[in-house]
Length: 292
Length: 292
Image 1 (cartoon, rainbow over the protein chains, first blue to last red):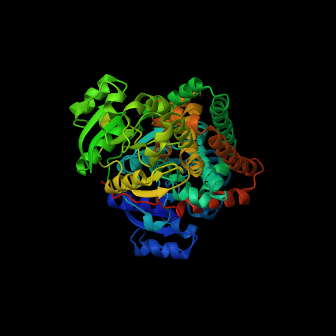
Image 2 (cartoon, rainbow over the protein chains, first blue to last red):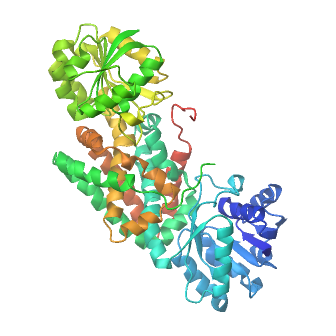
Image 3 (spheres, helix red, strand yellow):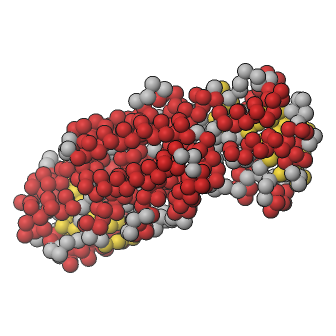
């Protein structure tokens, strides 16, 4: 299907995409670039990429499919670095967890070529980062959100849908705004809460002792707190308005619990818990991934 | 080791204890009582208990080991119901997630016999409740916290340690106060946050749509929100002071993130995330349970 993937960012997300694309027989050659030369070298040694490129520009040179798998804040600089060698029929995608800032950057930098860019957010990841954890199965059975804009070329959108479908993803189309609002609620806020909870415990005199007593509920609740700081700094920052708005709603909901607790109103407390418990018990992930 | 277990409360925790005790060959006979007759009947049909008792009092009649596995708020009434048939050498334990209120109730009701009671909190559970989910392996490889008081009899404490050790638990002794402070931080607050987050999302116009987009991070983060409302109403309520104090510390930590976000201070934001991420990445559950 494709001759050459130009991969900018050979970490967990980019590396997994390259492995999956290769395994599906969708690409003949992967040329990769990472900011850290040791990552690029490791990616080649692992067979994630075939050729190491010394720059983002040279990674996309001759590519008919380009994936940017860099922290969101590096997107604009990456567009700038590659724009001179982007060809008129190349499919360009990203994997960023926020979409509005990425799209604004694409408009500013790619200009007339912005139609080549199909913004993508695969709902997959691990709390472990780096090419060492790249996994050809990472995207299989997951949702991928595509947020095309008016200027997105139909041909590129079709190709993008074919690629993700071939990797076993279920595609959902949304506006960038709706995407960013939804993921502020169901992903960015939970991450911020998990980071904050770890900090709140760790900074207490007895924090270490407390942590030694924590069980499986805590383990699952805080798993996402181990996510990569630079990546999540960018995600939270680039979606700050929606995130702050979701955080306010959450704090109001928390306040309702505190009021019921403080006033000893067990009936209201139970009603609040019942509502949350029912909402969670009746929730299922849209896409179920078979256990590997 | 024991002739008869008197089990008051045949749900997930009590049922799992009975099954584990039987499998370990530590008890000859289990007599069980639950508030709901259909639960008691189901427990007998499943082989969790051998004999259905029509009251808590008759469940403990003749027992040399008694387990109270009822919501924390039902503990005092249960002590009152059984005290007349408690024998002088019986080991009485509970499995409550908070310890101070339970111990106060034991002092008030059991009076001179309070030394028979060894307060216990096994760090195990599932978000699924009911005897249907009882599991002889639930406690295996987990921590159990014992919070004896001055009047606890050494003989009973020894027996309690032997029982839990035989079930594959790792025992930790703590004061009731230290226990309640620690679990406010690492268990009760995470539950309250998870309930509150579900409510905050669910109550938005687009809440249903948002939830349909959530992925594996959200799944794990909110798993504990599906816990049983009546049980958690009691736990939160009976530890309200420590919980409110931990909630304040958490909200301060969250506020630090919001301030960094609002002021666009990416450096501080990254430092805050880095702290949380490092704390979580370097954390390990004290006891690792082999995957079943």
